[in-house]
Image 1: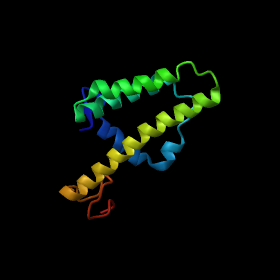
Image 2: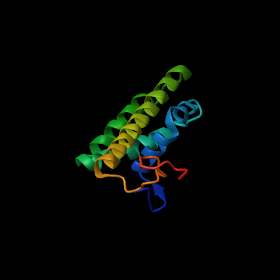
Image 3: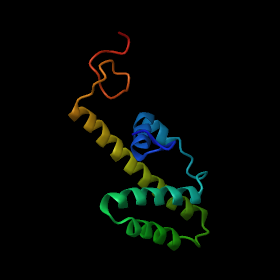
Image 4: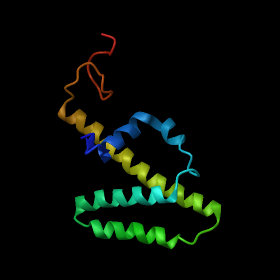
Length: 127
């Protein structure tokens, strides 16, 4: 489940997030992330979550409402705080999804015995 039509799925993005570790998350320059990119990412996540619950329109309406309420904000500090909140929300979901995937791999048994995929294995990679 890494790619559909050349695009990364949420699960593969979540795995990338977990493999990057906390250092990867700390390296994001929040000031350089565009509001448009955050909006699009939030809308994609809302569509993904909405498809699970059967309420895509409602989830996307909430995201749209949140962004519209801050549309006229001009204070750079407040804009940065809103960007950080959006990034934090996206990151939290990715981390949660990655944890679920790792736990799922542990429950269903990992067939990789050399540990090459980083999710377990019974032998060290050097053998």
